[in-house]
Image (cartoon, rainbow, N blue to C red; front, top):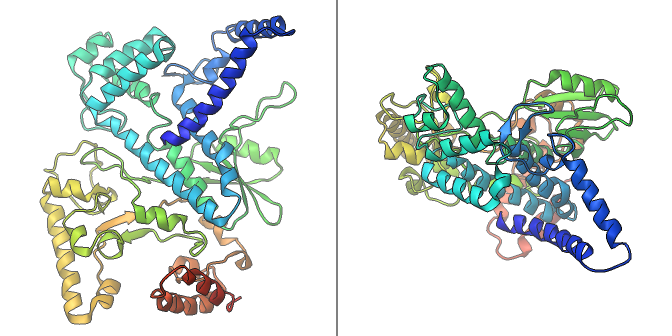
Length: 492
């Protein structure tokens, strides 16, 4: 992340140097330049909502014309790095497009780790201190934000998600000028959540959710993908109200348009955009719990190296639909079977029932235990008896199958499904994907899974190539790819 931000910082510093020279050195138009500079400053403060508040603002409060949100600005910085400039790198070759996808997924992992400030109160306090002293007076738009800052700074509990703890310490309540009304505590917690949200780029998955959808669209041969995340308002030349576009616009091969909106609740906005573009098809997509939050530690889970490599493998594996799960005990290429079971892989997730006696930091909904994913390391550390029993039974069943039927049959019929990892997944494009013509779908080699094959007219070639791919796996050296490319040309 640092090299990306450093690159952006150099561009800003470059412009600052030019502005400084034109503001201080002698030349014929210097007074005019300074006049324009003063005029920009005057216009900036003409209304309480300053123009520069759209570039940086100290906190988050309200909605509409008088509202403001720093998290949106910070998020747009990353969107600019990726969708404003980074895509130039991706356009030159498949290899660079793969790197582009890998960079984004690794960047998402870093942003997900930032989200751990929800539970890491000591680290959160250090971040709060360094931000306030580093940015100084511009860090707070108003005194209310400074009050919330001090309250959050003194709070040792979890924040930013649906926690089990609903009360607040007295020292926090005092800093928020608590009146004594018990119903007010919920409002105070909301205000602290809101302020915490302003510290990071669209927390709770907002930014990385949008980027996951972008990668999901890039992996499909469905048309040209136009990100509109930096153009959330399309201005009209006259007094007409601005138009709110979807997050992405897909230009299909036949020239038709499909708008892709991330997240629900924007039906009116989508309908107005569709009407303005004379029938542009609108699709609402969700990427629920991707990545999920572990209820035990309260931290979001990360994408493992295998997920990142597989998801960026768009030349040899340009899937229409990626496989939903990786069974870590069997498919991990970084850790051996025994290492995964011992919990040595930091990415492995457990998906199954747990004991109610285990101490959870996240509030769980009754009767939906198996909808949650947990860090396998958290399950082991807390020695959850229900999870331990279930894992043991699955391991025993798998190993007995090996003894009687062999490893391949055991993996096919009784894999250890409760230890898993997820690929980035998006819901809502199913109907749209089914309308993609077969001739637009290309997926040579590896015969990945049934979802792809339902759409594919090259299934026989794919089966043959899969067999050849396994046979070629033993070929050493750089010539392997050349051989595979030549074989693929035999199956047009």
